[in-house]
Length: 628
Image 1 (tube, rainbow, N blue to C red):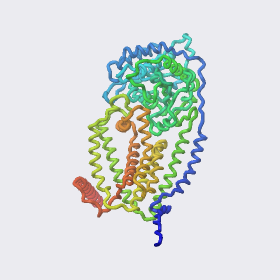
Image 2: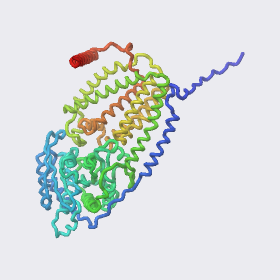
Image 3: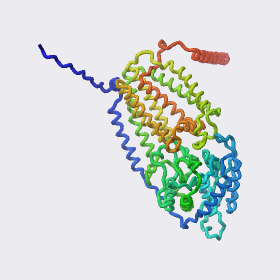
Image 4: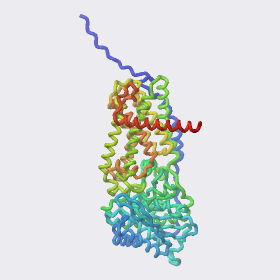
């Protein structure tokens, strides 16, 4: 009997390069990465170490005992200094009297603003001017208010007390021994209001103060009496950074007074602040308007909790106060070297220029763009029908755009959030209380809109390989357009797009693999937006409220509308790729494949057809009259 032959192994041959199963040109993708080397080398050569300004001649004369006494007097007499409270105008008057007593020209700028949870309130900026030989102004600011749930010893009675002490030193009459500090520049001391509610006082100063164009530098003092390490905050409301020399000078003066180098946001945090400009401190509006400004603080990225803010550490108050006085002296002597705003990321005591980072980030997009264009060209050469896939993407864009516009409409009606286009205080109810009923209404209306849109997106038959490739190609082309829009508006924001671009590019290669692999690659592309959410959740202490807080920034108008449009387009591309990865994608159906219209769609179509007919009739009448 003949021996039985072993079963033959079925050898699965790898699909050929360039076939529909392997449509992405991996060699072209890898080769294009060589173009990224030059921008990275350019970024490396742009690294520099900005020098600090020299130390002033006279030693600091900051009186910490006097500052601590002012803290006690302010918190004892005006515990609730929140905007709209009974004690708020009295606290402003008290600060104004103290500044006037130093012989400074003191005025009060009164204005009104709407604050979430408080409504329309009257706010007051108290402004004291110590005139110098030049009309160019160095401004010292500290917000006077608190959120009303605690006396606010550190946030921000400490900063207000330091501001009063610095003003006293600049306002002493001649013959006291300190008059030798006669300033080259005019020094302006501003006790701002609503600093705990988005920095409304600082925004007012940066946009409405008549002498704002003479401001050449701003030093903000906020929560400087805590137990934490001295810190410099420098993010703005736009992707800009204060003059690097100003930051280095402040760091050097703090090092001399405290014995330790001050903290500042890490390199990744600085990059995120440029990609999504945001700060809870009052230097932000000045930097956004091209005025170099920094905040000196002993807190973190988020001001201290009012429930634990019950004392001021004299050592921290004295050291940061003295450093602020020394910083003013250095700026007064050599301010011309520390003017203007730019963009950069500090790496230790060195920095990388913002323009070099922008070029590097844009170059990292090149391999994805080249591979996507090649993929699109291959589909065209093979005769792959792309139009239904783009129509499917168009339907998804329409749905996400409708949802975004519905959200903005509810926000404008005051159902979600109301107030100025400033960041809400994370410690208030406005930032943590999700409006359940409006969000339920939004979800219901969005679900109804999806039911209308999904009729054209449901699978009706098995999907052909070329149709699946067309769906991937359309989504990747859409993602390319989104990437170019981001590059044109804020290249730093590419840090949120690049993970999706380079991960989702390979989804067409995984058509025959398991669904788990496709979904895993899809999830990898979400790293960019997830990084932003995690930053708000951890760095700013928002936790699970981070998604709602980001939505609230959109609702109040702090996030520009162009960012909303780009996010909508990105979400639509991601949704189409998610449908492909999950096996639920279908190209836009041809006319013979469509179901009969439902009552809603039929009503909308009837109205549209009637309006078009009326327009055509009116155009014909006008042409007839004109011809007659």
